[in-house]
Image (cartoon, rainbow, N blue to C red; front, side, top):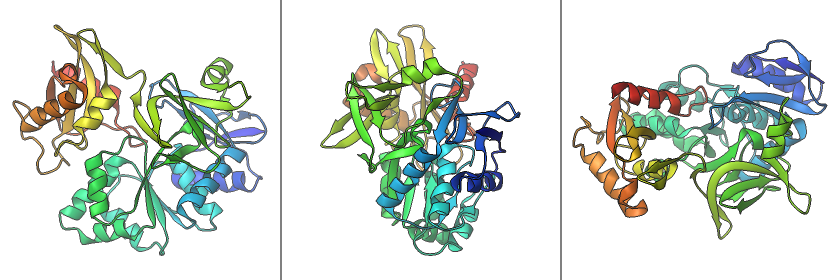
Length: 382
């Protein structure tokens, strides 16, 4: 089977995806640096090159059966209908928005380029009842800010969708509560490119998906799993493992627990610093920090510390922040509130050292924070 590199624009991906879904076209190559067509295993739907959470590029091979299973499982959970694309089509979340809409028999609506609340509201008005969309938390927060600022069209748009999937990173509890108060029907999703996108909704696995925790690491199984990594058998073998019963599991690299059948993610296993000889999960610190008013969009990164070896720093944008966001970093009440909240939940050793204000938080094309870029910006200020 041939793999054809495709531009990441929504219209180009949509055209190529039609051929994949009806079995007539070549596999999609998304995010590839090599523009030359090449052979891939039969049944491949797409190869998506992504750096994920590690920053190391990986070419994930997604089978057509897995892509279809994921779309069908989502429809079984939230319903069938047309979808509005607000995410980059070159990433799995955007690709699946297109897949779900086509498989439901509807032409997806494409909202591309710079994300803008007014454009979102205009596109939503043109969608029929029973429509769906998918956002990252930063997009949802921006829409809520616009609605709270008096933009009734944006508020109406949020309430008009049958469901809004939110994933890509942790959704702050304060943002989710604001969305629910605004009348939006939010579904938190968890997954990865290796699982054809979100496969656990509001902590519960989609139909056919299994989850377990082994040595603190979340593992997922089911028909949505990727075939592996292109030209990297060693990484495939390390990441996709079989248990004694022959079941194939994806090792997510995320720390988590399952309580009463509900999955709770605590952060990346490898996103840990050692401060004063104590291990601290930056993801857990960030989740607590984001519940502080004015810090919902904050990112927590590690910096060297002469006394403790490593320390954590809160980074937040001046623009687009809530009205209660700090006007200066020095002795900001938000920093004190964040330190108190972190100390109460994780202990005083985990308290962030300081708060850094930037004009804008850099993001990846997927909409996730560019953590490496944010950390470089913080280090440059030292």
